[in-house]
Amino acid sequence: MKKAFKIILIFLTLGFSASWASEDYDQVLKSPTSFFKEVAKVMLQTPITWEEPTNQSIHLEKNTAKYLLVQETIKKQNALNNRFGEEIQNIVDQSSVLNGHELHLLGKIIGASHSLSARALEYSSLYNLARNGSKPKVIYIDDLKKTKTNLLWLSTHVNLFGLYIDAYNYYYSNGKIRRVVKNIFKTRDMKNQKFKELGTMISHTTSSQNRKKLRKVLIEFNRNLPELLNQPALDDQTKRLVKSIQENRVTKILRSKESLTFKSHSFIDGFMSVLDKSMNILSAFFGNSVGAVRWRKGYLNNNLEVINFLEKNLKPLDMIFEKTPFALTDTFIPGNFGHAALYIGSKSQLIEIGMWNHPKVIPHHDALKKGHVIVEALRPGVRTASIKEWMNIDEVLVLRHPKIIENNKEEVFRMYSRIMDQIGKKYDFNFDVTTTDKVVCSELIYHAFGKINWPTKYIMGRATISPDDVAQVVLYKNSPIKFTSYLLSPKKSVVKVLNMDQLADKLGFKKNIERSTDLKASYDQVIRKCRKVRRRSLRQGSHRNKHRLITVCKTVYKELDYKNLERSYLIDKRHKEDGNHKP
Image 1: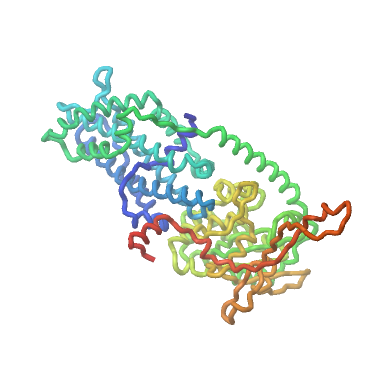
Image 2 (image 1 turned 30 degrees about the vertical axis):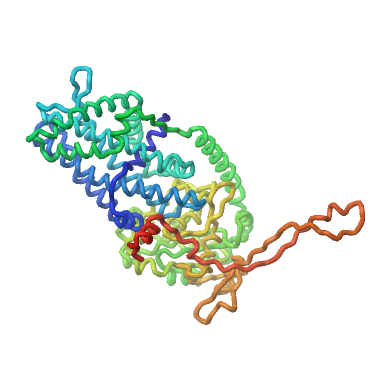
């Protein structure tokens, strides 16, 4: 088994079967902050006591209590990991793309699993299995302290082995999910020295030699367990350790000679990695070559009237789009808009919404005080910029999610975490929304507004999203996004204020007069459909076969409904079937 495969597995896991209420899982899936705070709290409460001797009663009792607390948290993490794994497998099987919230949640799950795994491994290292001559032995009827330390070691190893099996099934066997997970490990938050240490531990745990050892230990454990349970001096902690081993399904698997096969998928993943790198290099070369070609400055450049208008009217988390027809790159970007960014807010605005002292915002206080209130992804990478810097353009569109700040402070907190985490990342020249170590401008919005299911398109096997794809959602029925302002400068010192109808025309939509009312407009996407048909009546002649097939086109109009983009989770379907669904 390849080392990289083993390194990845540990962070994904903590996934053996465990019972957890569906409602609890549902809550974590949609609002994970509280659970991950609980994980952080448990990590603070469970530092291992290293004083010697390790089997001294008071130290052993304290460490066992801490270990059992970690195990209780792991049970919740297990249920979340397995159920979330089931959800994303279902999403991928339907040829859908993981949205920003799901990608963020996957990263948080990996991080929490890493923390809990590392803590469990500390106890495993402290309480090595005692040996009886050349044979490993767990249960000593005449020494219950030694038995407890051995059971703590065995409980850790059995559970870790279970984690690897479930992680493989949920997060590694599916190629698309596996490559997303591998990509998450490239982000700077996931790069640390513990990868090598945990990789070594996994190599040891999953080796055939260690499987044989665990099998022998579990056979001995099973044989002597009845006598152990009959001991009147057996304490509650030891009983709980025994239970954690007995209830783990891996115990039965390891006791038997059942074959366990893990495929590293190194060839296909290596091929895809080389292909991605090649495409990234070619795209970067092309983008950097044509990106510098501009034959004039934007008509809105240094337009103080427009700059003042934006400074007064922009609100935190506004989405801003621009068009630069004088830049060669805009020629190759499909649609009207060539770039998109996020307005994160001025100091006073961030204080007003309670985000100025956000842990991810604090490191950027100096930049914000200097007016760097926009986050954008450019070819050199993701950076902050001032409104004035950003205004070397001809058009600017502002869209807003009006309810997010008013109604969901917790989600706003998570959004700022996701946005500020992007700063400093490289530009994604592969234009793949499922990558998290690199982003393009529209992917910045895709990840920030994670719970919005943006429309994506597959190009060369990659899920992509353009600025127009993001902007067009405002024209959907039941859209959560609202139109705010749209300014266009056809020439220097001339600024036109455009409306929704004009935006629709630029994005390939048309207003439906019959459905529109004075209070709300309705729009249809204009779709040009063409097909080849065979002409039946042709004049006689030597070239008639060349004219037999002709192209016939027609224009159709389709109303797009945002509800058709909304995610349907398996958990919601189960709730409805059980009659416990809470809208």
